[in-house]
Image (cartoon, rainbow, N blue to C red):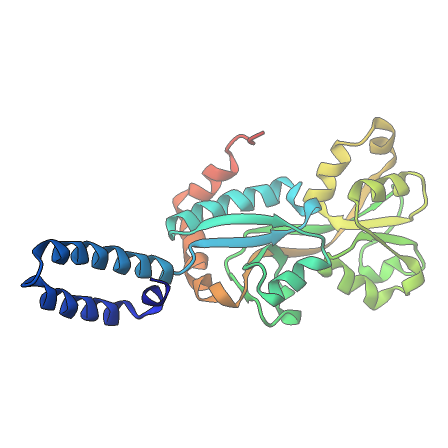
Length: 271
């Protein structure tokens, strides 16, 4: 039986039909049983050969706490459903996430910045943006004057590890000793409020959400100083499903034009 399942379904069918015809004149009941067996084996082989219809996308825990990323999750879940796929998320640390996509352990990354693919050639970008965003500067001194990345020179600056759109800019102008990598946005805000950081650079929408959940003392001691950069967020697919990128891009664009995109955005949050 195991060997039969490994045969090509067409070869298996031809073989059993010939066998069936040979035995038909000898034993009609056996012939009927063979027909049933033939149908079951062909169905079994066809099912085993069917491509996987589940796509697993990676995302970091801090990103998934953001309302914008949760919105993107709903958008792509809707799009993949229309394309006949089930989307699942796997929450991973920022360092492990790109490793998992490179090895093929997962099928892509839910949210990355526009230029992420330049350093990760194994990934294919969905060109239509999931959403646009700003990179903002936060300080404990509201008179802090930062209008460009260069203005951060000489300051002790914190940022969230793994956010390359920020890290790549900071490492161009600041010495390593002046940079503080953090994995927890809430901790970064606490350090800023205690004046252990001169500035924190973060994705504006995500950082603002974290600030609203802090104590009143922290809220009152942190100020948004300026915006340094505007960028867009995109879905990136691994090699296995890279062929879907143009279809997803077109579907997302159509979703925006039809109003479905805004409809999903305005849906009440689920618990």
